[in-house]
Length: 281
Image (cartoon, rainbow, N blue to C red; front, side, top):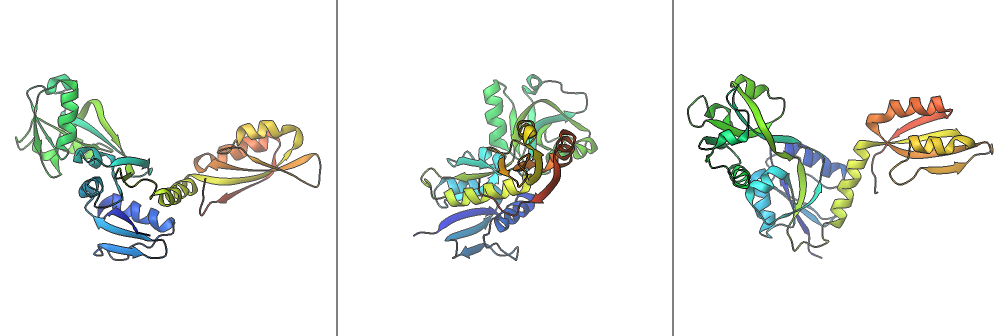
């Protein structure tokens, strides 16, 4: 059977998170940032460490089967690669920004110069909105484009907004794109990536959920189940005392203490919370 060929980001935040996720999923990953290829014979998979911006192109042309990259990079590449799953990391917001107080709506972009590292996304967005502007492609650090007179405004990824404010800029108008890291595939990869997807989904679940175990009075099972419904349904088991049952359910880790308080106030006891190391849902 041919090995599954997977593209992984080779640098930046996407690379750090993707490598950690693959390791948690049980795959062999590189130990040295200079390594460009890792063969995992036990899992019949081969990883290629590539520039994040190039991954969608490699996957879309069929040179590789699967890849991990940002949704923004996928859309900007205009690749034929398809989205398989949101991997829940690398979140970012892509928006327009201009000199503070100068722009209020995207209609004001008409006839202006827009600097960006995502030329195709911006051109497609402006075309969709019927706005004509000159889009200037820069390779990152676009915040200085306005002060240097290269552009009238920019379109860029915004997180806290601190970098924009330091450059005398502020976001305006509608958000162009909400992006995060995605597992992408070429159209001919079919179900070859099913096992990889199951493992990555298992990592996501293990990171986001904890296991709740508690004892509950039989008469309060329905109310307790409403507090901890689990992903599909809580597991209810009998105990030696017919007036009590044991309940097990998955709960979002962010809700741990709130749910514990609610269960205790309801009448549940012996409430224990355990971490999940791996999962298949």
